[in-house]
Image (tube, rainbow, N blue to C red):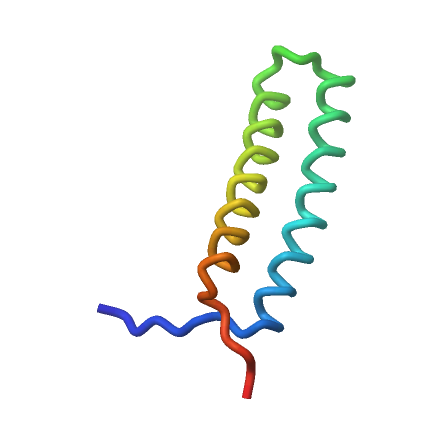
Amino acid sequence: MTAKYPLTVEQFHQIEQDLDEMRVRAEEIFHLLSAACGASDARTSRAEEVNGAIQRLQWAMERMADGRKVVAAG
């Protein structure tokens, strides 16, 4: 079994920032593909799924923060 270490507050905030940026880009890609390929195109569907996966990861990170599984560095 692998050892587990809680995220530091700084790491947690960096992940939140990275996910926010990823979500913006995923939404942009979805809208671009939707306009270029159509809403029923497989590529558009995959882009929408990526956006949904990022959202679910953000929710999981929020639950982690609510559960106080983040530690201060030091």
